[in-house]
Length: 330
Image 1 (spheres, rainbow, N blue to C red):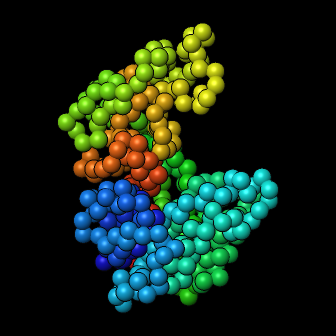
Image 2 (spheres, rainbow, N blue to C red; image 1 turned 135 degrees about the horizontal axis):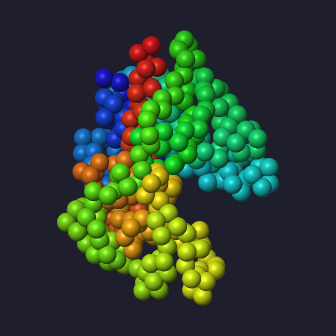
Image 3 (cartoon, rainbow, N blue to C red; image 1 turned 180 degrees about the vertical axis):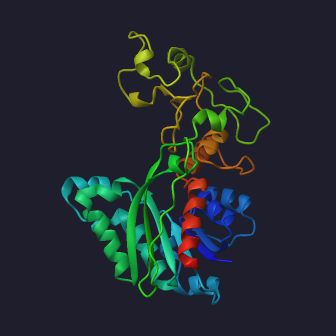
């Protein structure tokens, strides 16, 4: 059975896809206690380090591996500094907010897995005319890997969501195998309605017996404004005299039931259901991310939304895992 380590695991979308593809988890790393509760609840047999990765020592890593061969390290380190740096020309690796990327490289260098997969926001691919991408690749090349990067959209892999991400996939220099990226699904894309129309309708503030399927409570003003917005519509459907003119006006929209969802983020409170006058529940957002219904999110509703929004969609993770298996077996 191929083995993997999951860094910056979050609630476990990446882990879920690799488990389904037949990989064995050696350990995962996540520092946020509330997120760790959700991970441990859904992966009771995994070894999770609840720790700031910068404090995870080489000895602790080697002890957890216990002589096992590691086939792949996966993860999506937060890279928060690239947008500011793009305005001043600062190199990606010079920004202290991107130190967690260096931690990913550090663990790869310690463990020396056969492969690695690093997932991140798509803008890293094109930032500064690609120089950031080459900067990242160079750092992995320095520790012994050949690396390629590619932008993927989750809706091409059975996920009902237009979520664009960059994948950096690497393999050891001494292995004569091509790098394989996940292959797109054939046929029509899954729509948001395909994903969530099965859940019972709810009104603002209403609960249900389905885990994580509880509607948030909206103000009467918000409900009035959104009652004018049609399926797939925007704030321009709202009468001008009450139309929002400032703040985050981009979020006064309804999902389009005939298309994959827009990208799910950690806060979708002002994006409304295509036919019900409310925002989506955590259960519905999780379904759009391709989580199964038996995956339970713990904590308050805001934390749950953050976990869902920051996840790698499990179906995309599964497709990535299948491409890694192809590389390993070659």
